[in-house]
Image (cartoon, rainbow, N blue to C red; front, side):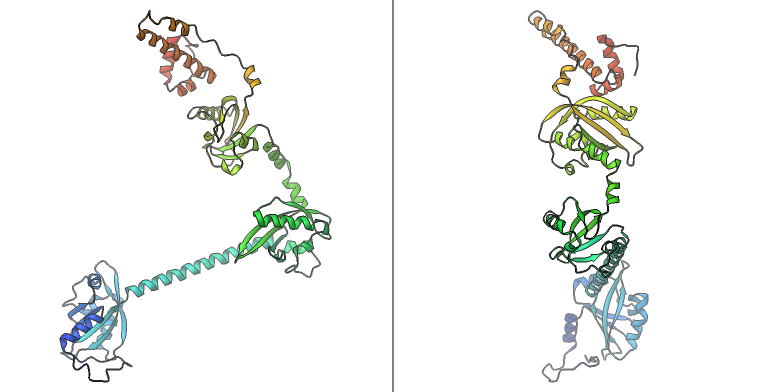
Length: 469
């Protein structure tokens, strides 16, 4: 088989290989090529071989007897015709059409066989290369999107930084020198040549307060949070509140320092702020929940009763985890609050996280017009004095003693029936007292229908049987 060599290729320089017969040449081609196609002078496929089963499976279609160009996609057919006519052998890529609608990219080298005008197309499967190119393109596009988001974030940060009315400093945590300052900070430290970059931050603070400022920054560096502290700048009479936050960038740590003006401090300490502080210091527990009874805010007294140290442990948690008897109290309390707007002196229990229980009374109020709608609960522990002031529970009916005296004189079946009636009556009386004689609520906590409760009331002669709720 006489094969033309591509431009620049060098043939064997010795005669050691001898003349390859057709079978040997076919085996060599099948071994080194992913696909090899013999095409006659009319462009019809006369023979073909595949270097692997995966390539044969990918091709799928029966190419024998078909025009080689017809096995390709529309955009590759003209290229296939040119390759069959072009005597200057070179590698060119085409895309075969697959039965499932996909494409099979192949890079072909076409050369005459020297037999009846046939040509041999030796192909290399480019699916792996195409997959790599696709992943490279996707990675490049992802990098471009990330770069765009980064630029947009930087633009927003720069706008906020420059337009902020509060003086803001970026300070190197290691050297305590200013890395960046916004225009408000430059105006506050006026007369410094228009820039503060590179200057020690401590130089801006009056001498008497520099140690406390450095101590604050040290605390922030150690704990990454600290309460704001009052500071006074050199050459300025007003005091500011300095708040600092530690952040890391490019393996270095920096402080973001804000100076809050006295006017802003006074506004922050207005009536709303004072009210919130007083509410947090109340001796009685107070908690705010959303409509689903998930806790939104709480005061310190509630944390004490719940046996917790931090507010983050309760926020977002259901109130029923600490308040009320499971499945009874809160459902009744919330239904009353939503119906009447508020409830006072609702008796229930408060459970601590470590198992302690305490009898409490709850005053609750609904705020349906708030954004978002919420419920507020004031929880007061019931002291021994309060318990002593409560009216004593009625004496147990004498029938209990009478029932025990019947043993031996009356069959057990009769005693059990009498006991059941007594317990049923006591439970109904307790439910009515617990719900302030609200029969609908009493039926709910007893697990009865209203009709069944009315029937039992009639049987036991309890309440005003003409009244309906």
